[in-house]
Image (cartoon, rainbow, N blue to C red; front, side, top):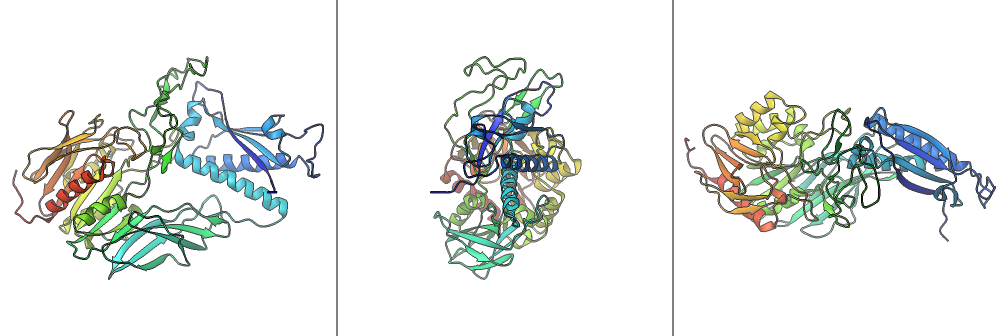
Length: 540
């Protein structure tokens, strides 16, 4: 027999508020069952109350500390629900939030919020058993950051940094595990590393990918982003791929000031799941708060289409240096990769590489819930802009791609004139519009530079790639900057190339969302050929 030490029922509740207040978290236990306050083994059923209190307290405290200071603790109920009454071990029935209330679900659909809540539940359970058994506890660490993977004389040097959990002092890493993947294979079982770096011998003409987890007596963290390296036998140069796409988020949402309308506006931004998502069922179509639930086929406010039921939606896999790197390898280049944090903090110097590829994906300024926490996930930071300008001043070749590389600068939560000036002055493009394409078809147009072909990228949720549903339209700025691609549905500019003392290619759609690998290979090959040309700059 497998011993059962506790039982836990994870629910969300119903209930709405028209003023956008939060319903919050309820804990339920059952003190008496069959007129007894004891379990069959003689244990006290009141332990269910202690378990419920610990978990609920941990959830509410962590949410308040990280996201929402006014998150509601609804209380602890002693009720005779089957889920809390029937198990013969300490049991909690959790009602985390109201799935019917917009203020709650603005948090409930956010992947980072879900992680924090899940971790809080785990911590509450852990503390219950530690107190019950009279033993100390240790919480598993958080994922590492500032990860980089570089090449030095045929050796891959991996470096990372452990992360301090401000909510849990015991969650300190003791060691790390490095997992390795070769080519398109699976990751191995990992190797234990005591420090914050590892040198790995690699073979030429093979792509190696790595991810790192932090470990302590409490367990193993979630994995880091995945970084890749490739040492070409006859290389044309070295490429630094920077993973600037760190965003995970809920879909865009809105609430009118008069409280009559509200909901999730996935036509503006579907959001970014962590890895993938099975909870998305379709776009919301009923935004009127006054419409009540009448039937499951007429659910009222918040009603959504059901065309995505049972389908898995791709999110941010954190594995895009490999996707980009394969194309650079086919073009004859060695490549390394790094997190954006390692570049911003000066650990990686762009100036040592012939080409730098900035992956921006769906990076865009974002505030969770009602927006009381600082803005996150902006495309450009002061530190990144400083590194990019230093690289271009040294005569580098820069590729940047992403859905919001202009909207995030000109039409976002916070718009900084200095950032706008940097983009125009250094990267040589400017914002024209968002929602620039519905179809995702792109075509080359005439310019002094040798770009051709037609491509298509994902604009709707699917199982293969995250979608770029509202890509930017960008236009060239200044001499020698030209539009090289336009969206086929409306001729809005989708790509800009600049050649001067340095070269840039800016694409307002994410390279990794192209529908097939051959399109990525073809586009990257044209970009590397453009970066390799040595003709005098062209005067417009």
